[in-house]
Length: 270
Image (cartoon, rainbow, N blue to C red):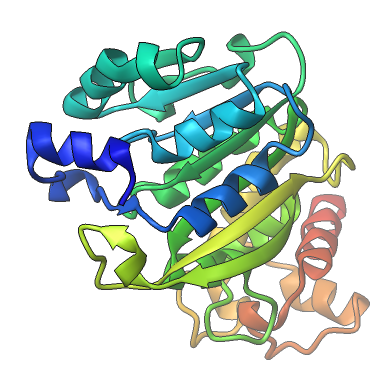
C-alpha cells in the first residue's frame, strides 16, 4: 500500500461510504491510468476526486500542470497538508465537480482522469460533455455495471439511453476490469476503466441536442414496449420508420445512434 494511503489511514482511519470512497492501491493499475490520461509530458490535466492522492502523485510525475478537484473535506485538507511533500505545484479545488467550469481552469486543451464515485459517475460524465471542444481525452473508472451501460452496443441487455448519449459524444474504449481487492477498503464490486475521446464532428446542431436526448430517454422509458408505444407523441412515427426501412415493432434497444439521429431528423421535417 502506498505511503499516501498509509498517511491517510493514520489520520482518518476510514473512508466515507456516503461518498463511495474506495482508493485504488495497486501501483501497476495506478501507473496505467496515469499513462492513459497524460500521453504527452507536461500537458494540462484535471483529476476528479483525488482522495488520498495516489493517482495524483503518479499524474504529477507526468505533468506539473495538474488541477485536482476534491469534494470531501477530509481529503481536500489531507491533500493541502501533504502537497509540499508530494506534488507542490498542483492546484487544489475543494468543490463539487458538478459546480466547476473546467474551461476556466486552462486556456488551452486539457485531459481528465478520475476514479469516479459510484453514486455520481453518470452525472459527472454528463457534466464533462459540456467541455468536449477543449478536452483531449478522459480516463475514468466506473463500477463495472455502469461502465457496461455506458459502452454498450445495440442489441445488448445493458444498452440504454446512457449508451446512446455516450456514443454521441465520445469514441469509447475499455482498458481493463479491476477487482475489488485492489482497493482500500476492499470494494464488493468490480470496476472498469474506460477511455473517452471526444468526437469532433457535430452530429446535430447544438440547439437540437436537448430535444434529441429527450426523445432518446423517452424511447427507452419502458424497454419492453415498442418504439411506437414509447414515442406516441410523435404521431407520424410509423411513417418515419417505414421511410427509414425500420419495422413498426422495433424497440429502442435495437437501434443504433445513427438510427436515432435519422428518426429525430425525419420527425422535425414532417
